[in-house]
Amino acid sequence: MTLPIPSGTRDVLPDEMRERHGVVAALRDVFTSHGYGEVATPAVEYASVLERAGVAAGAGAADPRFRSVDEHGETLVLRSDMTVPIARLVSARFSDAPLPIRLSYQAHCYRSIVPGRGQSREVLQAGIELVGAGAPDGTAEALTVLVGALQAVGLDDARVAVGDASIFPELLAGAGVDDARRAAILHELSTRDLVGLEREVRAACDEGTAAMLLHLASRRGGPELLDALEDPRAVAATEGVRQIVDGVDEDVRSRLILDLGLTLKLGYYTGAVFEVYAPGQGHAIGGGGRYDDLLGRFGRSLPAVGFALDVDALHTALVGKSRGSWRVGRPAPAPGLGAVSTPDAPTEVPS
Amino acid sequence: MNPFGLRIAVPRGVMMGETLDALDRVGVDTREVRENDRKLLFDDAGIVTMRPSDVPTYVESGAADIGVTGKDVLMEQRTRDVVELADLGFGPCRMVLDSIAGDADPAEEALRRLGVMRVATKYVTIATRYLEATGRQAEIVKVNGSVELAPLTGMVDAIVDLTATGTTLRENGLVIREEIAASTARLIANPATHRLRADAVDRLREALVAG
Image (tube, rainbow over all chains, first blue to last red; front, top):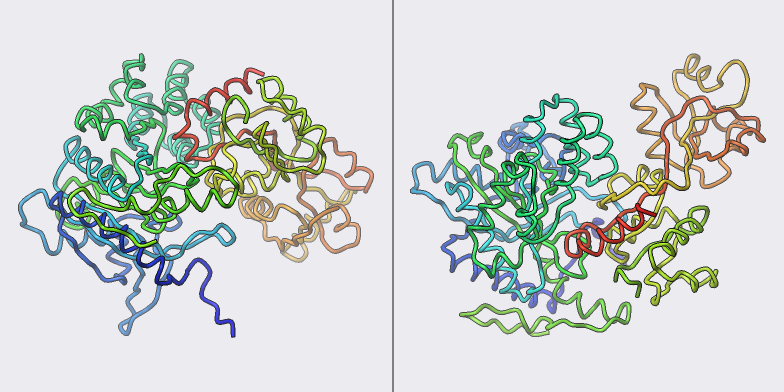
């Protein structure tokens, strides 16, 4: 008998479950060792509460897609990420707690998918939120925890792309670009259409400004790319990124890829944004950033930063190195799942 | 593998020749690809070949690092997470709305009398978005080839299709009523490759753009 499950969901069997526990345990140890306390929130929330986050319908992954109505006619939604529920939690339960507040979580989140792309409706996320610590120190701490987490699960060759969602809005405002053109430019940037970006930027700006913006949008690489910036406007707008680079230690810095054109589609990011990539994985396996305006919408105005890792994507990246090799006959450079361990508490993962 | 160390998705069909010419000029040896019509994967050249509409699929997943496909394909598959790096200029064509030639546009007639027009297309997303954006109610009929047949048999009032020279349209008694978008070949990259291997991606992009 074939009993289907919804597309974009899957069952996890004992072998994989053991390995997943290894990944989760390693992440949890890192979060705990940095002083982050683990929390859980309900999978269902009132739509009216989450809508305070100002996440517009159709704005991307953070827009909850699973809705239902309760006994009183209130709309309930399945959470689509943990950042907004934790913002609610902090405002409700930590309203006079000393700062900063360090919270971590492992939780399933629910999203809509495009059929036929192998996307998941249900994503197990592990992450942290650091509330009450502004830029650049809070951002540097979050990146340090993030790099530590990637190393602890054995993804030494994973890299964190770091950008700043405020670079382009700031430069466009400085150049006197009107709102409609600004929105068009930011749209091309967030959909990563560099051809459309060039068209929109050239239509909105003088030649020198356009050249500066297009140059900036395509810069990716190590900290040296900040030194190579010449236009004083670009230097000023990327000051936040420079402070992050200066605020982390050498080991963390070596795992960052600065990407000055990086923006994320989620509307609530205000400053630094991160995307995590691992070789052999075509998609980002995690992401995050600063959201300094979000907490204020829930009653306690505080700067905040956080990230979430997709646990199954981390697991796939670990086994994918060896799995990829039998798929396409490439040699496997992978240490494999035996590398899932933490410095102080090695967790052997049966494979 | 090619000197860039990137796996390149090359579209079969009308864009293939110019794509291979462009790759030859930047130092990718494409002889084996030209000599083998049926083979799909060329490890020495670092090239994989496929239908243009499959290029974003392979590039998005990371199975290919970089690829060439038409802007029409990218518009139709607009939710694909790929980086559109450059307009390569070749393979120009237009996405147009056509109907049977004559003084009265059958599509406008249908809209006026019935409040809705029937439109056949291979490009369901583009047609739907365009007709919505221009405030017209339309019933979209998905067909997979020879779209020109659909209005001739009376199945639909108009079609949305790609045209390069317009010859096929004229021979079937159709005329272009509206131009929706222009399309050329685009260079696209996987977002992870775009960051993890920024130098190689930029070198290939700059070489291809310089021609």
